[in-house]
Amino acid sequence: MKQDLGGGQPQSWKRSGPERAATLALWLHATTWCWYLTSHPDGRTWTPRPWYPHKKTPSFLDALAALRRTLWAQRITHMSSPTGEDQQITSVILDTLAYAA
Image: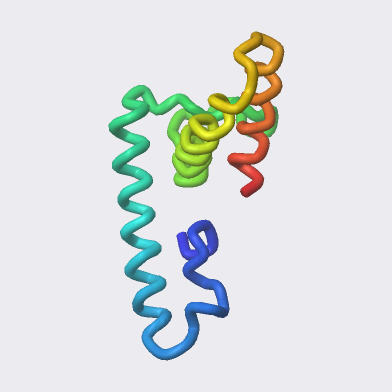
């Protein structure tokens, strides 16, 4: 969890930083899961990967990628044209970046 949410970054190692970083990371973890479970009750938001064809449940990184995709799509789609090809390209880019971030 700390590596996914930045809790292990050196900037948080001073004074009471570790306590604050751990608290924030736990809060963000819980909030991300709550958002994911209420927004995607069926749970299927990840792209099937060839190396994991029988995946049945989402991981935290899947939930975090879905949140990133949603937030970024809201910012990007209102700036781009609504053609089908543009939406398809935007969707592929968002999916790739959501897992890479």
